[in-house]
Amino acid sequence: MIEEVIPILHVKDAGAAAAWYARLGFGTQWEHRFGPGMPAFVEVSRGDVRLFLSEHQGDARPGTLVYLRVRDVDAVAAEFGVTAQDQPWAREVELRDPDGNRLRVGTPAEGG
Image (tube, rainbow, N blue to C red):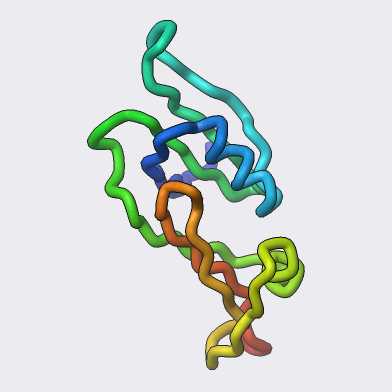
């Protein structure tokens, strides 16, 4: 078993959130509900990176910030119609999902 950290992001509509994360290259792995009409808990992944998207109250605060390192931040920027900015540590963009969660996406600078 690989030890890892998996951020949990609060979302109002897990299906809509999963569709938004698909634009970042994440695919839905599974969804759980305790019963019909109950809140959803969904895992999305992009390679070895995983996120949990939860409709459950109290699982996470809206506006959470997650940092995602990618090989090509400019491709992500183009998908979302934004421009990546150079920082000393990385080339980055900051995005907000439909629920206000923040994703800072970056490609490390040379030697970083």
